[in-house]
Amino acid sequence: MSKRISILPEALTNKIAAGEVVERPASVIKELIENSLDAGATEVSIAITAGGRRKICVTDNGHGMSREDALLSFERHATSKISVDSDLENITTLGFRGEALPSIASVSRFSLATRETGSPEGTEIIIEGGKVRDVRACGMPTGTVISVEQIFFNLPARLKFLKSAETEAGHVGDVVARMAVSRPDVAFTCTSDDRELLRLQQSDLKRRLSQVVGRESVQHLYPIAGGGECATISGFISAPSLVRSGTESIYTYINGRFIRDKVVQHAVMQAYRSVIDRGRYPVVALFIELPPGEVDVNVHPTKHEVRFRRQSVVHDALQKAIEDVLSRSPWLPSPSATITVTKETTGQAYRERIAAAAQATLAMPPRERSFPEQSPVKGEVAAVTSSSRPSLCEPVAHFQTEAPQPQSTGYFSSLAVIGQFHSEYILCQADSELVIIDQHAASERVAYQRLKQQCQAGNIESQRLLFPETVELSFSEVAVAVKFNADLAGIGFELEPFGGTTVMVSAAPRIVARKNPLLLIRDILADLISFGTSAAFTEALDSLLSRIACHSVIRGAHLLDNRQIKELLQQMDQTDFAASCPHGRPVSHVVTLAELQKIFKRT
Ligand code: ADP
Ligand code: MG
Image 1 (cartoon, protein in one colour):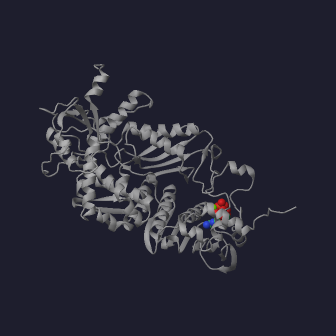
Image 2 (cartoon, helix red, strand yellow; image 1 turned 180 degrees about the vertical axis):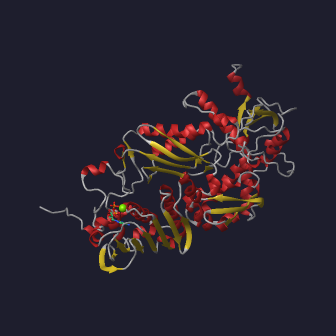
Image 3 (cartoon, protein in one colour; image 1 turned 90 degrees about the vertical axis):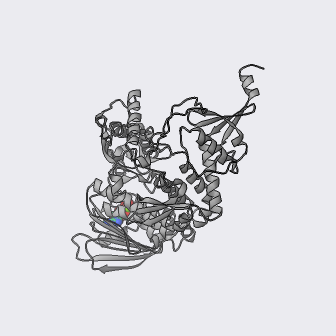
């Protein structure tokens, strides 16, 4: 009989657990801050070197540990936070699995110094790759200092997956920001290579948010309060005018724990669905308090996911609480700001929300809002319908009126223009064919090809903004903005650091300079976060150019006059690949006379 199975040695099981808990420096910091908060700290400071790849140090003024506990804390499943089965149903601390310290210590050169309240001296423990090297007494204030050097030094496969120091520092900043929002009553400082990323005094939630999401953004946040017998909901949510292109500013907490949960996110997006465009996300800081038995946080070792006992009740309570604020539209200066809509699901409520959102859009400064200003189309361009439906909140860009182009005699300019349908499509005639042109796709293709040519010639036209604008970014976004600064300059953007996580945009590609370059830069940074490397920038250039093109042209319904239609058709003739937009959608569609006759049964 062969014996194939053996129990793995503890050092190896710790390394395996580390695979789940310790993904990168930011995840180490999350675990260490959780421990500090569980220990009742009122001050937590974080210092990293080389994005945390070289060194991470977290210092707190919590209750510390005795020597005996400190030694025990490195044992797997050693915790002071739960002790019997039933405790799992009633978790009130951030930690409870007793896995973080042994995991981190097994994949780094680790030291812990801690002094318990009332103890005359502290204890210092040095551990290397999970092995205790030294235990000694030390002098220190009450609290705990943990230092983690050379993470993954004994796990080369993991080390390879770490990104550049700036990227890792960005993730660390984001983690600290999330935890700082959860506990405004705790002071946090965070330094990266001796540069201060955050210095947050003890304060209230609103002030904390202004330090994390930016003072400018916080003016667009409104308090929320709601819930029912199963959950209490509080926090702040943004007006529809404050949106991001990613979910990074959706801060959601269950019983004080930052979570990324599909149910919660779905409820948020459902509430916002009719007031912000697809692909845009609000800024929210939502705190959901539930009896511990109503939620299971023991779903994943990182504890980012949760399971609700009554999922739909929580979902609906959250959605309703958000919709209550949105339907009141507290950002409106007009008397309609006092409308209270109670039955959210009624058509009336929905219509009022739409109306409120439209008003909010109208209340935006003119630069952000550019509805068509031309009078309805007259003369030979007979619009089939003259109704123009500006899309909500998203600025409807003006038709790109360029310097006169040389006359061309290609296919598109030879078409006889019939008119415009629904302010979105151009109808033309070519002999016995009806040609329908998607004006957005067409102008996007023209803009994209022009940008591409400029890019190949190395001279994308950049335009200095009359009034440079500042944009508040997440730490990850700042990290990519710094990393890709030269590349971004190559496509016309000039970005300068403006203190903290604020960046000043002083120039933008000329074709978007008068539109909304800030929204575009956010989209581009979100793309770059997913691309990662500089080599990928070149690979991704096409999609970035098509994004710029998309931002530069007609969106949604837009009335065009005859001159503008002719100009667009001419530009199409000077454009390669004019048959489809940069996303591959067709630009025009032909209906032949024969097809029409078939429809009308004339054949
Ligand atoms: P968990 O937090 O799940 O209990 P950890 O491995 O993170 O597991 O920590 C093990 C134990 O070490 C904790 O239960 C706690 O008692 C102690 N501990 C860890 N960090 C600190 C700290 N900063 N201050 C005081 N005690 C701590
Ligand atoms: Mg812990």
